[in-house]
Structure formats: structure tokens, C-alpha cells
Image (cartoon, rainbow, N blue to C red; front, side):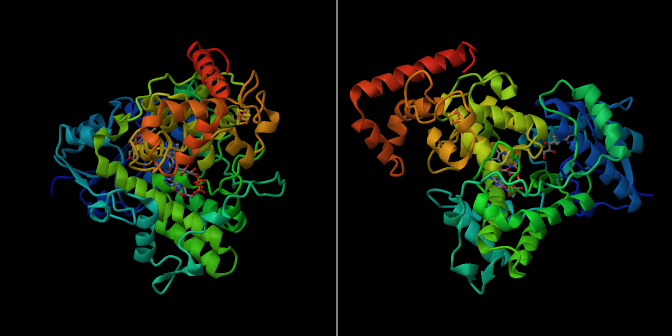
Length: 510
Ligand code: FAD
Ligand code: DLZ
Ligand code: SF4
């Protein structure tokens, strides 16, 4: 009999057709899956995120066994668990007499490097669960002065044929974002995402996570995520039926009493491998062709997946391991404690952090224009901001988190992802949400004791970085507005912003 090889399947590779499994031989090889302290602890992950991954991993292992695979599964509390992926590879190699490992390339440079340094040779196969290959992305990017998602997205539309009529975009436009900026009103009838009661496997994981990670930021219970492919498919159907029709309209809206609005809440399932990006988009397209969903919603949703999701992945691997340490704006302030739940008087921030703690979820505009906006305006160290996002969201894996946080949100990459920094005063938050009504600050106040911190810090940010952004045609108008402001008023804004930042540094409640 030939020597068995180890087939490594990581926690976010829960796809039956993942590259390493395709290369494996059921009759010869052993699948290795491992819950390990190193992966569960390299940032203080939200307990719901750890529970989701462990429960989904255990069920996936069972499904593989059902298909005839031999699976060596390490539970976190197993005696002999070495605590790391390379350690578990070595342990299983000794157990089964294997001399070779086949793995699908992880979505994180740290883990790629760890596998390359493992005691056994590890053959890394490209992760082909994406629409665009890395070679395809690099070929598209080559020679372009700036990489812009919109042009990449059109290529992906042509490549997949999604929402195409011949070689023309369906509905006559590539992008319907212009129709997608409506604020939402509280609506008790808007259906919330479907919830799944934990079964016996999940309950066991919840007990483990409670004991080991119960002190991490975030609520473990109630736990309601899907943890199998069948449930993830149900969650997709639930979204397409109930929330996709108005997804476009309310994509950017935020409401205090509605943590999900019309969002899909499937990022975690896509990223863990329970759903396939193309099948998700084809389902949305079918709903449009059936007349169930308008084009602005179908297009807006599909763009997030074949556009943004594929684009940020291409950027992460193109930019290399140094990407996450970039800090082009030289920001070095510590992340305030209120990101971890300490008191803040800013209602918008308090709400988004509380919702994040409750669900390990916030939608895109909450991540970008509330917490991300505040961190950028206040000049927080982008490494600390990245660590926070990587820890608190159930869908966070570095390949997708880093370009969104370091690139899109914090401009730490100097403009690789975003053509200008995503900063705004309180007016944007007020327009798109109902947060300001219940806030201790007044969004209309530009200065004074109750001035909204976003108003003060917005100008302060622009002036601190004037040399870099003044020439940007999309920002020139703001500098003209500032220059036209009364000199005394400008002095007051800067002095009050400095006072606010000093209070932040002194850990006072702001
Ligand atoms: P929906 O709004 O319903 O969108 C549908 C799908 O589109 C998502 O599930 C996701 O797969 C995809 N998508 C949408 N926007 C993006 C994007 N910018 N990049 C990649 N995919 C996108 N997404 C992650 O998957 N993991 C992260 O760690 C992550 N961190 C983020 C950090 C910041 C600061 C910002 C601004 C965005 C981040 N995003 C991240 C993108 C986006 O916020 C989430 O994908 C989305 O909120 C997930 O919720 P949903 O499934 O309800 O998405
Ligand atoms: C995020 C995570 C966690 C919390 N735990 C595990 C684990 O115990 N075992 C595992 O194989 N993967 C885990 N992961 C995912 C990895 O840390 C890593 O982010 C991805 O595999 C990168 O693609
Ligand atoms: Fe946020 Fe300012 Fe509105 Fe308060 S007033 S909720 S701080 S934007």
C-alpha cells in the first residue's frame, strides 16, 4: 500500500470540492482538520466567530467521513493537541506515517509562511473557489496607473455573463448605485435573517467556547448562525425571498432598532466555504429574471460579490505580506477602549459596537462610515484598527479584512484600494441613520460643548493631511470651503478638535 498523504483542510476551507480534497485519494490519504489555540488566539476573536467555525468544521468533518474519507480531527480540548496547525501536521504525520502534506493555500500570509516552514513538505495548491484567479487579477492590474473596482467588475460581469444581455449590461447600465442611497424608516415588518437553533454538536462547541473564550469581547449566546451547507443555503433563500428585493434601496441605511436591514448576512458562509460565490450570484440573477427583484438590487448585490469581494482578494495577494503593516498617513493613536465596549457618548459608535458585540456582525456602511470613519478621523494606528476588525466580525479573514480596513477604510495603503479617504462629518451619519436623535452630541453643532466629534475631527483630519489630499480633485472643494470659513471659526474648530483628541488620549469618556 502506498504511503498516506495528509490533506489539510482549514477552518475556512469547508467546501467539498476545495483544491486539496480534489487532489486527495480517499483510499490512501488522511484529511487533517484541527481546532488549535494558535488560530483561535492570534487575535481575541468574538466567541460567536470561534463557535461558528468550530461547529461548521465538526459538521464538515462528519460529512467527509460520510463520503468515505478518513478524517483525523483535533478538537481544541483533545489531549495531545499541539496547539498549532504545523504542530498538528507533525503529530498526524507521525501517527499515520505520512511524509507529505497537500493543502489549499490559506487566505492569510501568516499561515502560508507557517506552512512553508512546517517540518514536512507542504504542497500548496491555489484556492480556486474564486471567480478570478490571481494570475487573471495580476494580468488585469498590470500596467494600470490605478486599480479601480468598477473596471475590474465589468470584466467579471463579462467573464461570468451575470446580468448581461449579449455584450451589454442588463438594464443599460453597469452600476445602479445612484438609485441605492435611500435612508430607511423603522419597519416592524422587515423580516430579520433566519435563525437556527443550535443542535447537539453546536451546543457542545458553545460549552467549549464559553469555557475557553468566554472573556473575549462579544456575546456567545444566543447563537443562531448556520453551521452547515444546508443551513447556509436556507439562509441564502431567506435573504433572496425577503430582503434582496429592497437590498439596493437601503444598502447604505442604518437604523438603531434594525441591525441587519436588507443585508444578506452571508459573508461568513461565503468566506468559510459553505456557499459558493457564483451560485449565490446566479441565485440573485434568477430572482431578477423571474421578476421578483428589481435590477438595482440584483446588480448592487452581485457587484459586492463578483466586484468588491474578488477585487480585494486580488489586492491582498498582489500587495504581498507587507500590506498589513502599511501606515501611509502615519497614524499612531491607540484604539480607544470604547471599541471594546467601554462607555462613549457618541450614540452611533456605541450602537455599532453594541450590535457587533451582540452578533459579530455589522453591515458595510456601519463598518466604513461609523467605526472606520471615527478611527481614520482620530488618527488611530491602522494595525490596531485591523486587529479589531479581524477579531470582532464572524466573516473576518485577513485576505478580505485587510484591504477593507487598511485600504478602503483607513487609507493606510496610500490609495491602492480607495481613490480618496472615506471620511465624513456627522451630516452623513445623520442623513443615513436615526442615530443622531438619541445622541448626547448635536449633529448640527459644528463647535461648542455639544459639537458632534465627527464634525470637529473631519476638518482637523483634512487640515492635518492637507499636503497629501489638497490636489485630489474629489477633495479640492472641501479645502475651498475650509479656506472660505471665518478665521476665528477655523481656530475654534482646530482648538476644540485638539481638546477632543487630548481627552481621547487621556481615556476620558468622549
Ligand atoms: P451584504 O451587504 O449583504 O453583501 C453581500 C456580500 O457581498 C457579502 O456577504 C460579501 O461577501 C460581499 N461584500 C460586500 N462588500 C464587500 C467588500 N467590501 N469586500 C468584500 N466582500 C464584500 N467583509 C468580509 O467578508 N470580511 C471582513 O473581514 C470585512 N471587513 C470589513 C471591514 C471594513 C472596515 C469594511 C468597510 C468592510 C468590510 N467587509 C468585510 C465588507 C462588508 O462590510 C462585509 O462583507 C459585509 O458587511 C458582510 O455582510 P453581509 O453578508 O450582510 O453583506
Ligand atoms: C479564524 C480561525 C479560528 C478562530 N480557528 C481556526 C482553527 O482552529 N483551525 C483552523 O484551521 N482555522 C481556524 N481559523 C481560520 C484561520 O485562522 C485562518 O484565518 C484561515 O484559515 C485563513 O484562510
Ligand atoms: Fe454620531 Fe455625531 Fe450623530 Fe452623535 S451626533 S450619533 S456622534 S454623528
